[in-house]
Image 1 (tube, rainbow, N blue to C red):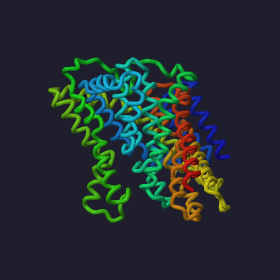
Image 2: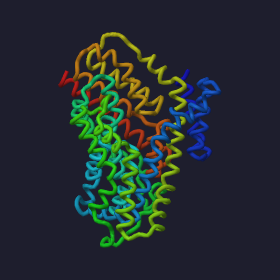
Image 3: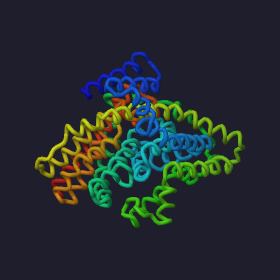
Image 4: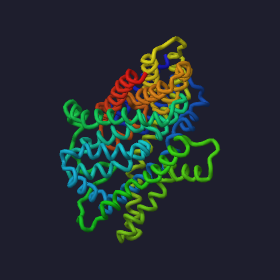
Length: 459
C-alpha cells in the first residue's frame, strides 16, 4: 500500500509541473504534504518531516553555502574571462573531436574527492564555455562530466556514501578504492561518451545548442590577452579540491581512510579544511582576489559578479530543498523500513546471490526514497549479517560496491540530483527522465555487471 501511495504522489507531482506548469519548488512542497497524508502520518509530525533534519533542513543546511559560494566562484571566473581562457586552451590542446574525453578525465579526477553537488557547481560554467567555443550542445559534453562525477560518488572512497557503506560492512576501504576504480572507470566511459551517442538518437531535442542558460548565465567572448592565465583560472575553479585532495591523501596514509575516534590536532585540522563548506569559503575568498582584485576590478564589479552568481543558483537550491522535503516524508513515513522488512532474509546464499541481493535492495530503496546515501546505508544494514556470516573480506568489498551501484539506479523526482541536472542543463521533465534517469541506470547496471565479473574472478 505504501508503494501505491508513493506512485500516486509522484503522479501528482508530474501533473502539477507538466500539466499545470506550476513552479517546481511549490509543486515539490505540495506533493510532500500530499504524500505525508497518504502515508497516514500524524498531522503534528508532517511539518518536521518536511522541514526538519530529514527533509529540507538536511538538504539546505548542508548545501546552501556550497551551492551559493560555488555559484559565486563560477561567476567570478566567468566574468573575468577565466572560463573563456580554459575553454580556448582545452580546445587547442584536445581538439573538438576529443573534448568529451578531456571533460570525462578532468571530471573523474575532480569527482574522486569532491561531492557531486560541488563538482556540478564548479564544472558547469567551464564545460558550458567549452561547449560554446566548440560549437556543440552543453549536454554533448555534460553527459560525460555527469557520468564521471556520479561514478566516482557511487563507488570511490573518500566519497561519503561508499566510505560509510564499506565501514558498515567491515570492508577494507583501501581495497574498496582499488576495485572501485576499476568499476567506476568502466561505468564512466559507458555512461559518458558511449551513452551520449545513443541519447542523441532517441532524445535529439535535448541536444540544443544554447548560448545562455539561467543557471550559468550568458557566456561572453573576451580578448584572450586580457583574461587571467590558464593556470590561475583553473586553480581558482578547482581550489576547493586542493583541500579535499590533501585530506584524502592524509587520511588514506595515516588513518586508513576514515575519521579516527580519537583524532589528533592534525587529524582535526585536516578534517576541518576538507569540510566542503570550509573549503568553499576559503576558495571564494581566493577567487575574489584572483578573479577580482588581481584583475583590477573595483568593488562594484566584484559585488555584481557575486550577486549574479548567487541569484543564478538560488532557484536551484530551493528546488533541491523541495526534493529534500519529499525525501523527508519518505524516510520519516517509514517507507525505507518497509522495504527493509520486504527484503529481510536469513537463508543461505552464494557469493553471486549476495551481490545481486545487495544491489536489488539498494535499488528498490533508491527508487522509493530517492537518496543514494539513505538507500546505501539502509541496504548495508540489511545485508550486514549475511556478509559477516561469509567471513570473506573480498566479498565484503564487492557487496559494498554492489550497494553503491544499486543506490544510483533510476534517479527520478524524489532525488535532489534529478532537479540539479534538470536546472543546470535547462531541460524539460521528459528530457531529464530521458537523459539523467537513464544515465544513472546505465551506471548502476554496468556497475553491477562489472562487479559480478570481479566476483567470478576473485571469489
